[in-house]
Length: 427
Image (cartoon, rainbow, N blue to C red):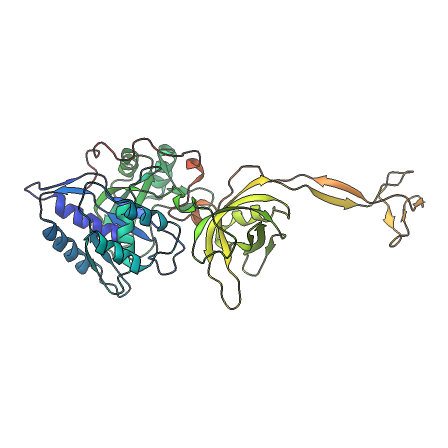
């Protein structure tokens, strides 16, 4: 199943009410939470509908509960539902949501919030989904945000079929209004998932209208059931806004830190690249894994003494390995000088001389000239990394929250909540 599909079905039910008792105050919100939580769903998505309705709260609650019971049938679906009533979101819930982006939050704290504010709630199995449900309500997308139009299939058993040439053309013609649709470096379509869920495709962009225009360029699409536009924190890098401490770093945290490269990056079995960074608080090994492709090659250009900013998530230690910072990007702040040491040139014929042994000087093989006074030459090598450039994995290895290259100059948007939904935001 897919949480966005459940949200789509619920919104369709609410807003197609003939009595028009419910009004949507914002696009459905698609909030991605800390991607390093080990027990998360694949995309760690939390959904919320911000509505104004004359339907009694308990009736709304029963309707939502009915959809969850109907669709969240997987034995691994620990779904959670909450309904918060009020015109403003309390600071405590907003803070909870902020921490859900980069840290580990417990079910106990979520239940405490539910009790404190008299929130109606329902959960299945372990109930861990209540954490995400509270977090989705608290994230108001007040700063940087994006949009995604998600289309759904009629039959999940039927393979997805979207014209490759249309996707490539759509991507070229709609950038920078859209992003992350097609990875031209690896010739990979990025808008279609590969699992058995109902999602047919999803196109991300800077505005709702940009995503809709891009989607229209792909039509007609076989097996199309319907679509809906979401407002989201995808592509914002929001999970890496916190500073990590290297003094006893906690597992599963996401964030960034400025540190100095301590060891030479080395490739290990499987193509993974590892190196260690340190600052006044401590040190930690960093990893760039094989799927990050060319990102590993940039990491191998680092040398001890380089000062860099890195962002990523901390992997839990095991009996064989310590905690590791899995990198999502690094940015050189100051590059150390790199030297190559070479034998001196012969003063007679300018040929590179050979060592006669430790402390015995150098001899020219060409003319026989010898010298005990000459020393090795240190030649400064060029560094092929750019200061202040953010190096990150190619598009094919991006996470939902990864900020793509074309969005890195975007800080925030001045109109956090649309004045009104574009005509035709759902079908």
